[in-house]
Structure formats: structure tokens, C-alpha cells
Length: 271
Image 1 (cartoon, rainbow, N blue to C red):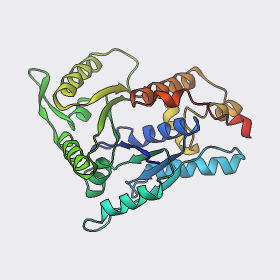
Image 2 (tube, one colour):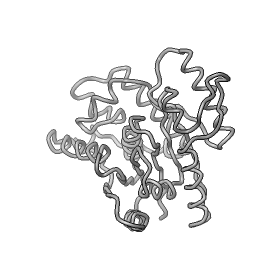
Image 3 (tube, rainbow, N blue to C red):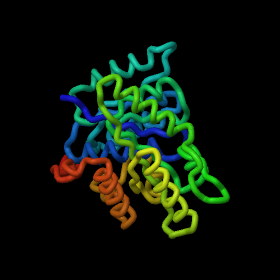
Image 4 (cartoon, rainbow, N blue to C red):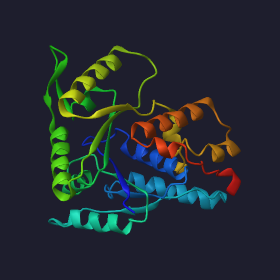
């Protein structure tokens, strides 16, 4: 079995990579898929802590939760980063999906992770500061003047992937933490991203709106997909239902509509 590798990457921190990675992981686990996660930002370790929090919640409350096979990799000296990552991926060959979370800065380990992607997901908040990582904006014309450094990194990753096994990378830029209002900045971001997508070759998708639920569930290791567990303690709010639909839409955007029809794991039925 050859796992499908989904990499969450952006050279800027604070865009929601780890949150989206975890919510995507649980959404796929809840559909009965075998999922592994790799944290390439071992020092900050946000994804690793999210997974650990989830395990502790299950143990503390006696609620069995679907868990990914998880490993964290720290940077290695010289050219050992790619070899270590390759060994880890080989160890996870029995999984159907491997999700890799990368650090919010450029490094050899991050570059290696990008080059293994079948799908590269780049979350971008609705901010011109975040957009600047992918493309520079002409302030007078309010249009893209030229691609930025992260776009160059993705181009190098595509070349490395093609050289290694002849594969290609499906690059998806996700508009993340969207505001509820149709503000001028939101419209401008849409226009600029559309222009940039045609220029450097990525697809666009909408991620998740700015919701408190995405932040408050981190400490418990839960996600919007854990509605059966949530309903025991706090009830299912409309925001939970909306968040779950957002993740369903994102899975479809990532090219996995076949998984959406798979039987959903019932957490409540296993308590």
C-alpha cells in the first residue's frame, strides 16, 4: 500500500497549519481510514501536543477515540533530514494517509517534507501580511507584482518530487480563519489570490471560519468531528455543525470525495 501524503506548509507561522492538520486527521479517522501524522516542527510541537492532549482526554474520560500513528522528527545535521523522513514514511507504509505538519520557517527538514507531498495545503489568513509570503502586492495597482520566497520553495519541492519518483504535487492554498463579513479586505484577498493562482499554479479552497471552537478544543485534543463526544458534555451547537461541514468541504477540495461516502465511525457507540 502506498499512502497518500498530505503536507501542511507555509513559511509563516500562525496561519493554522497544525489546527487544520489535526482536524483533517480526525475527519479521516472518523471515516474509518488509517491515518499517520508526522510533526516536523518538533521544537514547537503543536501537532504533537494536540495528539497527546487527545490521548489524555480519552484516558481521563474513558472515551475511546480514533488515534493516528504519530511521530515527531527533529532537524538532523547535514543531509540526514530527508533520509530520516524517508525512513519514517516507510515505517508508516501500512497507513492509507500520512499527514505532515511543517514548521513556519524554511529549513532543510521542511523542504524535505514539502518534496514528499502528493497534496500540499498552504493555509493563508485573510491578511495581506500572510499573502506577502506567497506573492508581493503592488500597493498602487493592487495587483500581484511577482511571486514571493515561499512560492519559490514550492517550485523547488515540485522539481525535487519529479526528480525522485516522477510524481507531481497538487498545491492547494486554503483561505483560512475567514471573517463572517464580506469586507473590502476579504474581497481584495480573493481577487489577488485568484490572480496569483493563475500565475504560479495552485488551486484555491476555503478552510475554516474564525470560530472559538477551533481554539478551545485544543486542550482536550478534540475537533469539530468529535460531535458524538461533545454532545455528552456540552451539547451540539450550531457552530459545531457548521465547523464540521467546513471540514467536509475541505476534504472534498483536497480531492478525497470517495472517503466522504465511507461509513462514519461512531464514537458514542464505542463508549
